[in-house]
Length: 418
Ligand SMILES: Nc1ncnc2c1ncn2[C@@H]1O[C@H](COP(=O)(O)OP(=O)(O)OP(=O)(O)O)[C@@H](O)[C@H]1O
Ligand SMILES: [Mg+2]
Image (cartoon, rainbow, N blue to C red; front, side, top):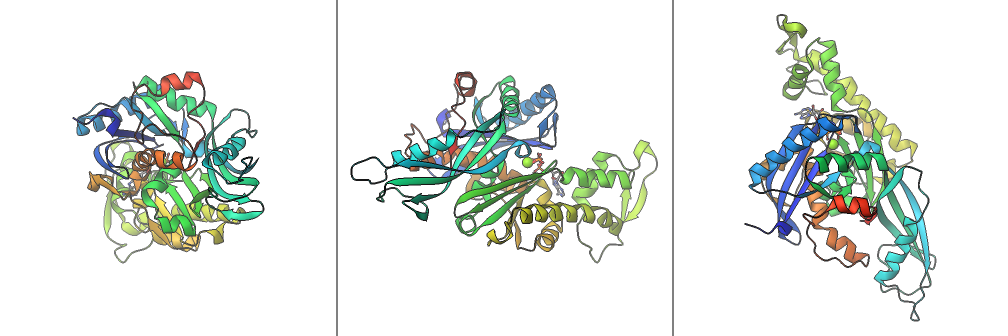
């Protein structure tokens, strides 16, 4: 039996699905997935927790499923905060290099990032992450790692991700009630980026677009850092609703039709007949496949038209030289990559987790980007913290004795850096 410190557990609390991953650390940079749990979420609507009790029950079932598959119990998890609730902004911090030789040390990096953490943030928000973008040393801009360089004024440009205190508390309460502690709360697209983006994409500039059930969330990564986050309240759930309303079929049947037959682009076999169950148990009707495409296509187009508007509003279109990577369950929809490419005007690929061993067939799906990414995020925490001058006891998850205590003590878990 492996030591509990060798185990990392994560949970992604999505609008549509709760998804838990239990993984074992194989080496400083690799994990083996031992168990997964995936359950329909009750209690979250468009990224907002609306029923804590229902959510706790979904969490319990999800974790139990993963524990059974992994044959081990978990005591603490890394959890995502709903991306729809997160906010982010770019900020700057400045310090003077006071050592006699004026050589920048890792401690100086920590000091300059700490000054950013002291910035005023809107009431009711908490800092989740302080993510360095680049440094400026005595006016020289664009420095990625100034340690060892000489200068007297060190400036850091950082991206700060915040979440409403209440939303974070609700996530923690739900997990604590389900008998697990929380190791960290993580912005989901940071986690997904760990799992699906290549170092080249991260460097050249790429949009990570997470099209889930309730929201479509966007994050821009460039030169290895996060520069922008945004969230739109349109995603797969609306596609299912459209099918349900237009075809007057129950939502679960609309969901099945979508998964099995829907496409966002026309196809030669658009006249293939499909059977559609009726609301209220009436006799099923037969429609042509093409009608389903006509229902689905406008909504999918809308998702990427609105995404494009958001990208253009912030003048970011030219920043993503590597295009976009689509994750989330809706990335499975047939034709969605073509529609996304056409509407966004950039190459788009599907993102699936890589760099993991174990249940590869199960987790090699775009909807597993965030839960697998959370585990990778924790695995690489030590490396990130050492880079910015923090001492780390273990690169592994602090399983057990975790968050319930820390939450009361202070918000020490907020403000981790990239
Ligand atoms: N094969 C498929 N074809 C089309 N849509 C699919 C397929 N599989 C899953 N989906 C859709 O993906 C959505 C769920 O995706 P995901 O699990 O990423 O959402 P979530 O994380 O729970 O939601 P959110 O991130 O919006 O809070 C649902 O709308 C579901 O219908
Ligand atoms: Mg999601």
